[in-house]
Image (cartoon, one colour):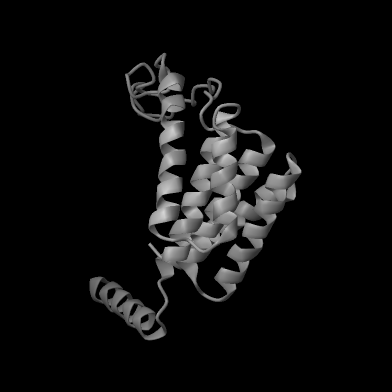
Length: 192
């Protein structure tokens, strides 16, 4: 059995190298695009940001069809961030408390996703929102500097960075999401 499994793994690796396809990247791109399809169906919000999100979504689908899987995954990530920004969802704001998961047989109550909610790194710690809000100017600044350093040719990236800078004081949550979308598009353009 072990020999058969090893042979199968070697066969898959050989086929992957022969075809030049990275199946891991293809799977990530496919999953991100599937999530993007779901989000795009019920998207509502600010028209300008929705138009940008739909444009980036079309780019991601084109990149996936061209078998540029890394680029497709990054563009899909940027589109997801733009859809979130259009709907007004803010990653900087705190999310409400979630109901505790039901305990399974043999699980200790301190393990699992909510086991350390009172720890300093957990979601239940006061002051977490203030620390996240302090990160927003840094992310916008990083997007602006990467735009200049990598000499990104995409006009949409320039528009996203300019929009994030404009909204920084009024809407830090949207500015954060716009800057992250710009960073994802820069990453897609440069290939890493």
